[in-house]
Image (cartoon, rainbow, N blue to C red; front, side):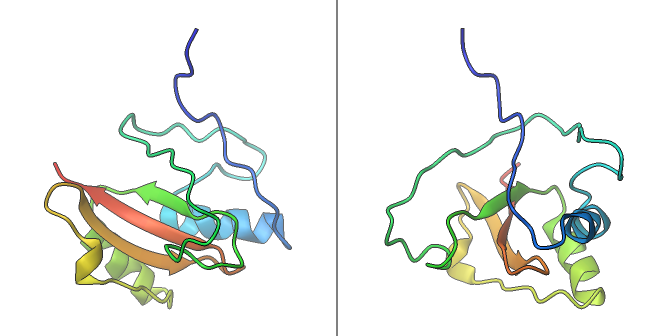
Length: 118
């Protein structure tokens, strides 16, 4: 027997309903209210524990969500138009791995957006 993928991501939120709606509206992640399954495209998933003192994401957070995207520029344009702060750094991008950007959800959770090399 082997694990075939991640079956879910569960985390605490001060306002789960509002936060779920934000993810669905701005990132297309999740399912409409009353539904629980988000069917996603197959593709690579990185599963990587980090050292407790990593500076790769904020020290006060125990996790960072990394979401795979197929049109990073288009998504960033949409997010900026919606007033979402977007951070990009040239040193995050790699011709072997892809391009990256970061945002935060309304509750301050770090989200890394990743457009893999095609």
